[in-house]
Length: 366
Image 1 (cartoon, rainbow, N blue to C red):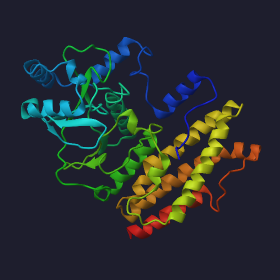
Image 2: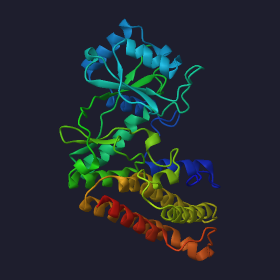
Image 3: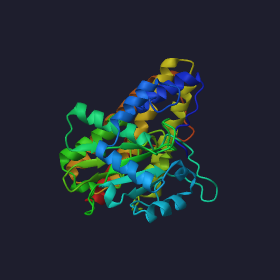
Image 4: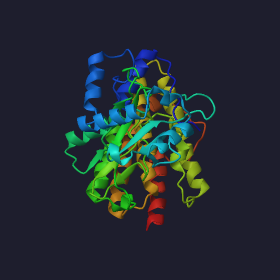
């Protein structure tokens, strides 16, 4: 079951504008949408420190690394960099993550993934990798405004590959990040209550949607970092709702899971009907409701399966309950006025089904 079909009946530009506003990604990275000055400021904000930039430029020149890198398959690129002293630090991801050789400093580079293994390299979304910098901005700007000190996104730098065009594109820039010392594996249970609370608040505020313990980590200095911040990791991007509902330990009964899926399916039908309404207020409410559902199921509910103490679990449940009530408030006027009937009747409301899920996960966490 795919959650919330993103096709709308209203004009395309209105819809795109609403989605961009909801997701919080500005149009800096979208070609022909903003002036060149905005892109220059963006590049300046994410420029490598001068000394590191010079080291990278010299290294690339010495080893004749140029835009031809992006004509390689992923395996070929990995081998090319490995031969120069890089070391892969992540497997199975949507990007090639390589730790830099010592002479380049304590960094990792991230190249775009989804390379074809036989044909020339193809990136299906040529702004996805460098959108990590914009996603990091969104988290860090919220953290700054909220006075959060111990939770942030990892710094993201953009290194222009010598000889490539200056246009913002995954074909022209590599993402460079500081290497974090995570030798000792930490879990959400190692977060302080305040850190966990701030992490949950950030997930809600910025609509982060790739929540798991490999993406939100605690380093040895006691700072929580969001590691993956590309647009793909924000909500409404390549998401499939049931995958966020089925917990990995297999302890929940099929009946419980089917009941939640039924509730979600009914909400999906309702929101899709709202989007088809001639009343623009219903369309606005539908977009807000679908985003809040995304936050619940992709951002927050995955934390249910994590090992966290009673106080953290209570705060998580409080946050989810609040969002569920907001969704119900948004859809109720349309539901009442249209006498909406679901095709998948169920005995519980979405709120009750989520409450039951928390109760079940609390038992397994005890």
